Length: 107
Image (cartoon, rainbow, N blue to C red; front, side, top):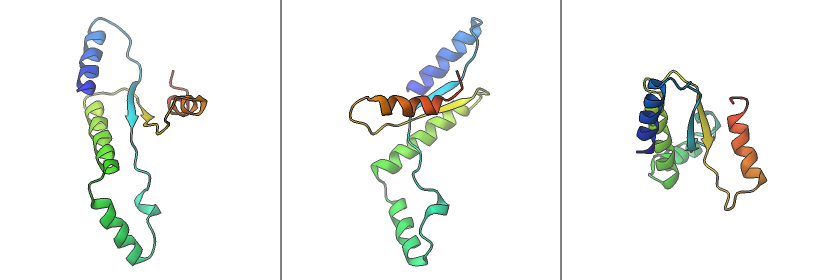
């Protein structure tokens, strides 16, 4: 829902002549492992693939992030900036630095 509302707001603002900037995808949950990083032995690889197919909170979060990434990219030529999901219990300097690193030189 927030992604749809953000896209609607963007269309309305552009309709009134506001300049378009980057689009931020907040709380992005990226996969921690790529296919390349899975264990090389066939038996270990099978165990990892079985685990990867199990629905977990992590896999649901990755799925949801991927879904909103597609929603944001649909019909949008602007730069998409992924702000990572932070596992920090409190906002500290390290948290702010993670977000700043994701934003980088966009602004």
